[in-house]
View 1 (cartoon, one colour):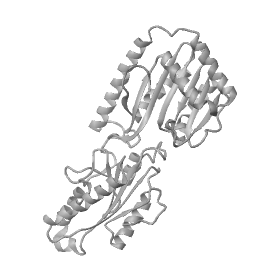
View 2 (cartoon, rainbow, N blue to C red):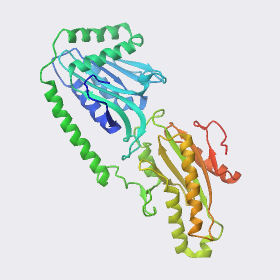
View 3 (cartoon, rainbow, N blue to C red):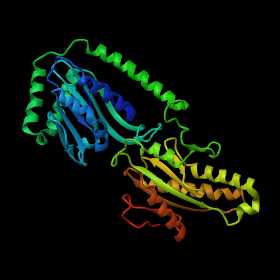
View 4 (cartoon, one colour):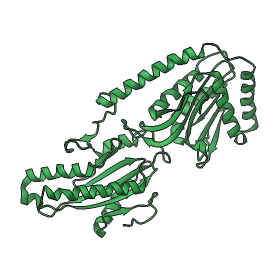
Length: 380
């Protein structure tokens, strides 16, 4: 983390994107204070691909740009930019950092993935990090030195020499007075923008509001049901997303009623029963979770940052809640089957979970478990 004396902040993905873009914008601005070095760690390739053009512009300006991505070295970079592959097991794989440093300017964002999420318009936007940021040259110098040392054996001699040249020139000059004044103004603007974004989401008045994609028909007080297009928007399948970061528990649920129940009790009673079933299926969900109605009998529960055992517990709670409906509808005993998995794959393996739910219903298994990468036959 930074040496500013401030404790780490809890930051969302949206917050990190805003600060990252501010630092990148500063790096691209025309200024006579070079040379410039920029170091960025992107976690996964899809996140870098979205910003590739920015780093090509930074490199074209004469800066030295180093880009780190987990699992593979970014290729096709222009002169002045160099990609570094990070190992999945090293702590840098959890790091989202953007650093910019010249003899007269510095900015740094350093954040660590918590593999947790808070309620937000999309799953990606709600990802949580422990992070700090600043627009102070000496702090940026410290962070560039840290990553230069961590990545030194993965950098070509020419790149390492160019970074060292910037570091040497920074050390020869005092930092610019007044940095804390400028940073204070930036922090005020940033905090107000964050507050406004949270308020827009909370009231459902902004893009991707909470009600978007929800079906009418959720029970009163229950989590609204998403349709399949709403699920794609929330999980990021229509936009930027990447495998290997936030784990998500998937629980497929199938609820079958006795044959002939609608005919025996009438359409109005059947509609009330359907609302009661939805309420029971969604009852265990947290504010960060989502429920999707796949068909009249099938539901998918999406629970970020849950372990398999926790997800199995939730599946048991769904069984109990649906089973409890017999007290309100004594002549209707619903059959419930579920399948559970936890995965960091994107897009989410919805079809595999549906297949496993069908298997559980045929075999009479209350809760089937799937291997995380769907490599094994589901078991009860």
